[in-house]
Length: 196
Length: 52
Image (cartoon, rainbow over all chains, first blue to last red; front, side, top):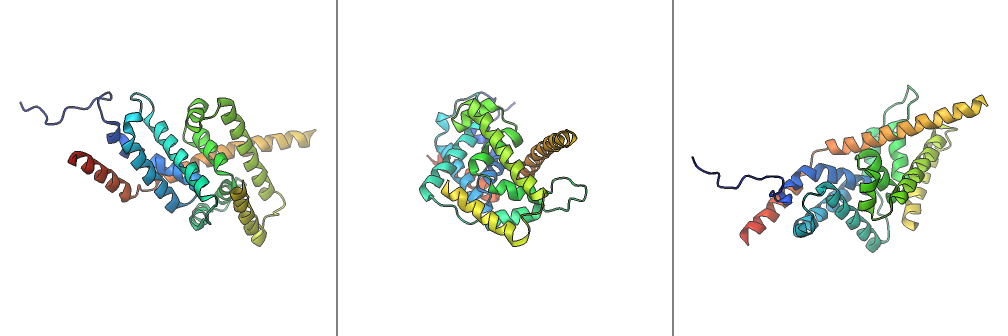
C-alpha cells in the first residue's frame, strides 16, 4: 500500500493557515459589522489574511483561531481609523439597509429601522454587540479580543443596547424621524462618529 | 402603575428583538458568498510559501 504523499493532518499538526478558509465568512461578517461598507470590509479582511499568514508563528496552537483572527481584524480596523481620522461616506451601508427593509405589519421592529440604528452606533458599540450578541463569543473571549476588562465589555454592551433602544423607541414613537429629518439625523450620526 | 409595567414589558420585548435582529444581521452577512479574491489571495500566499 502506498503511504499518502502528504502526512495526515491532525488538529495538533495541521498548519493553522490551512484552516483560514473556514473563517473567511465569519471574518467578513465581523468586518461588515465594523465598517458597514462592503468594499471597506473586503479590504479589511484582505489585510487580516495577509497579517495572519505572515504572523502565523505568533498564533498559539490549541487556542481559538477565530478569536485570534478577529483580534487582528479589529486591531487593523482601529489602527486604520486612527490613521485616516475621518469617516468615509457609506453608500454601501445605505444599500444594505434598504435590502433589509420589510413592512412590519405585526408591530415587530422593522429590520430596516434596526439596521439604520445599528449603522449609527459607534464602531466600538457595533463591535461589542456583534461579538457578544451575534457571533457567540463569551464576555471573557470578547474582553481578550478587545484588550479590555470583562466588566468593560459588559458595561459597553449595556450602553450599546441602551443606545439602540433609545434610537428605536424614538423611531417607533412619534415618528419624529420621518422623511428628510431621518436622513439628516443619519448624517449627523455619522459625523458624530467621526468626531468621537 | 399599570402604565409603568406596560412600559417595562415593552422595553424587555424591544431588547429581545434587538438580540434577534443582531443575530439576523450577522447571519445575513455570514450567508453572503465569500469573494473569490480571498481564496485567490490564500492560494497566492501558499504558492509563494511553497516556492521558498
